[in-house]
Image (cartoon, rainbow, N blue to C red; front, side):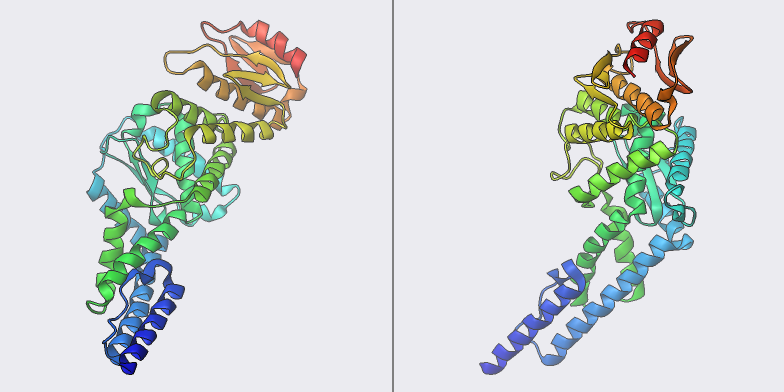
Amino acid sequence: MKGNLWKRRVAMGLAAGMLAFGGSFAVQPAPAADAGWGEVIGAVVGGFKAKAEAEKQIKELDQTEQGRQELLTMFQEEYGVEENSPWESLCARAIDRVSAGIAKSDPSVHQKPFLWFINQQDSFNAFCSLGHVMSINRGLFYYLQNEDEIAVVFGHEMGHGMKSHVADSWRKKIDVAIGAQVLAGMTNASEARNIVLNTVVKQINQVSIGRAHEWEADGLALKYITDAGYNPGAAAAVWQRFMEQQGNNPQNFASEMFNPSDHPTNKERRDKYMQSVKEYSGGNVEVKDGAVYVKGKKFVAPAATESMSSAERAYFVQGNLAAAYHNGHAKEEAYVDGNIVMLGAQPVMSCLRGDESAAALVDKLNQMK
């Protein structure tokens, strides 16, 4: 009786040690109370070795060109490649520009450039996996056609990749999958690689990225697109568009950007981006109730177009004005160039049917700024 109690305590102590070593790895069952000492030691040693082998495979897939290309091929086989997509050239341009924006603050992107393809899935989604491998659902373009807004989505996913959010999340899932194999026998390199690949490729929609990492990726997306020369107002505009089409519910889309219940809501993200762009403008420009305000005075509520609501357009105007203030153009006079309101060298707004005239807006802006 005392011998069995002693073995049980040893097994519990070793299991606790495995928890400290590998986080979720401890989900594997502890050895039975009547297991022999050799079996207890074997299970623990096997667990350590299996985890080390899995980590080796993760690093190879994440950090070597051969591993990255292997992942890309497997994702293409799993989700299908959309050949001759009309959006391919836009994606290539946007990813190149956002990558250049990333490089301004993190040149390491040059050592591991993003690999990407458009897949044949019709749901709204884009994801970045290990190795900076990105897949873009063709369904994304059913919702977004504006390049600045598409760049926001790409910037968000690329932010996850640059900060290894996805790799860290996959480690937890892979630990569980590896742990389930340990008691059945030692996991060798080939088995570990198969488990890693199967978990990463087959369970991409089950990746769990927490709220803090979502906010970080949102912030990085704004920085990346702004440094890439896109309109910073596009970030809030994306979420305004989603709210109008899908409501203030973060679970209406298939993407990992939206699924988890602990993620910020569409409204929270829109408002956070608006506030960040206001700060970028030096506190001079904001959007309230669908209208653009300059130094606390209402400047314009843009008219709706066939492709964009009044509120969505307002965030683009805010972004242009914010860039003007941030880059010093607001020190100059506003003027009209055709139907475009200009502030120094910065275009502010193209006046379309239903808008106030460019001349009227220029007069108003010169009095406010």
